[in-house]
Length: 337
Image (tube, rainbow, N blue to C red; front, side, top):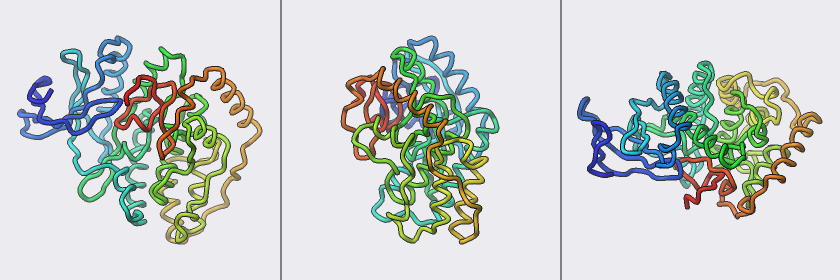
């Protein structure tokens, strides 16, 4: 596509690729600026269901005006390509920052956590869930400020494939809430849980639950207590660990009222301020019953791909495509890699 045009946007170079899309740097001559264009796989352009839902979702996301939500400038369809035009960000992602040799400074963690939390609360107030919070979807500027990208797009793409495969579990296993792992209806508390996983990873440089198979990671989200981040970073206050425990509570009702209250609690914990005693991490009997039902359903619909070894982050291939910029991190059925 390099050298061609989508509408009036001139494609300059490819800057990213993955299971969900190809990303190009493009030039917009009408306002004399460079932009990013995300071009979705052709099979989605051929789906009437997807095109209708994509347009509806992008219109809703495009109305979000928050400093830490990556804005969508335009969208369209041309030559069997569905695309959306966004602000160009070329300073990496939170994933890159986490993978740096040195641990992230607490000041950076607090700042990025608050920025993303504020963006999520704003979106939630407007009735929009993200459903795929992870470091790769948090873009950075030159000052390492965070910008949340890919609202809802992976969800509608995943649902189209889920309708074809009969598997309704959608997400990136390493960051999925227990209720997401069970295929239940989601609320803002699910995004908050995923942000808690990202918080754990910013502190420790790894996700809390590690397993060689994606299905194993999902079981751990549903059943296992949250590991102590203090085992990886001994200077983390105990009160800060309690914040992680609460934001990653198994039951949504046991988490914080919203993401910003969680971010504020974490900042206060680092400053040594007191917090009230937090809920137990034991799995409640009612929740365990729901988990047992979900696990039974997973076993009935099991695909041999569920047993494929995952990558070092524990989020690789299964039998549902959850398209994204890094297909190695997702449940997948279309053989992106």
